[in-house]
Length: 218
Image 1: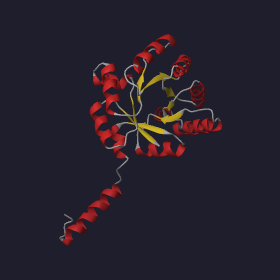
Image 2: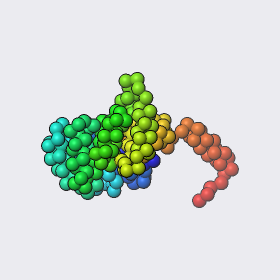
Image 3: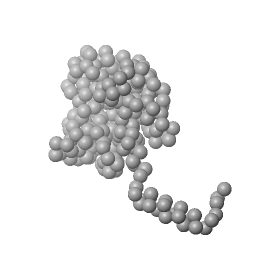
Image 4: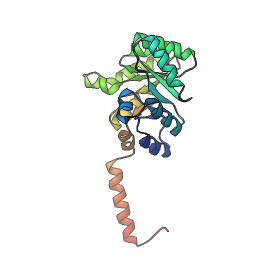
């Protein structure tokens, strides 16, 4: 499974990119707003910092506006993936933008039926928001499993499942087991994937034993 980092913080992205653990970046209007900077400037810097796809989201809610904004965003860099919402106009825009050779990430997906529409519209990515489904008492990962089954049943679909609204390392594991192609996570969650208390405990023990030998490798 690939990892996308869900942030618009260029310093975080550059640091994580040097570790070789980031395959792409996802942003949204809320994340861009936190930077306090112009969207074109932020997206351009991110695209220069990472080779993988960088999702940049339209803010228009009707078809013509989505097309205009999507083309504008795509003009920033070759690795921009245009994000559109899982709405009727969003699916129409996905079809139109995809036919123009652009990668489209259909976001704010909360059902397998929305994911089916996105795939038929030619989406490169579908982003089910598992955490937000969990928040209202539903099983977000079940939606990922349903989408996986639907996509596997129709070999003409090329849409990748991008599990979103991921908040814990355990949720990353569940997403991978459910069949997600990608998980997009905040920087803190990505770093926590490398941590385990028993690893830290074992390291302390090993170093204590080594110290008692009085040896040095160098």
